[in-house]
Length: 101
Image 1: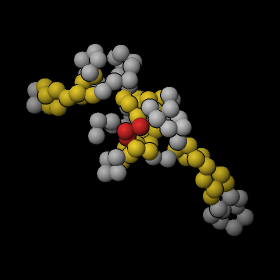
Image 2: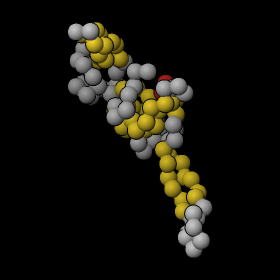
Image 3: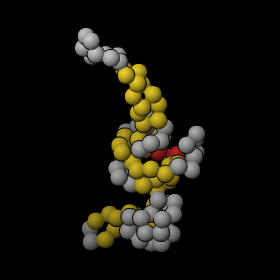
């Protein structure tokens, strides 16, 4: 997968189309990502102990990685990712400005 944790991404399809956020979690086996503040749902939690109140928590749920596009840190635009091998190390490169991501 070309998207990693802490990358800034743009949502390109779905109900949150056009929003940007930081990747919190990557699930490579399922090809899913969790983005901060995107695809938020409410979860009702029951009380854990007697006398404690239940609560409603908002959580960001995972969605498919094809619905997001990486934003380059250098040119600040949504870009596709290329790979370059530099000194025996594989590096992600921006296709627009050719800078290392």
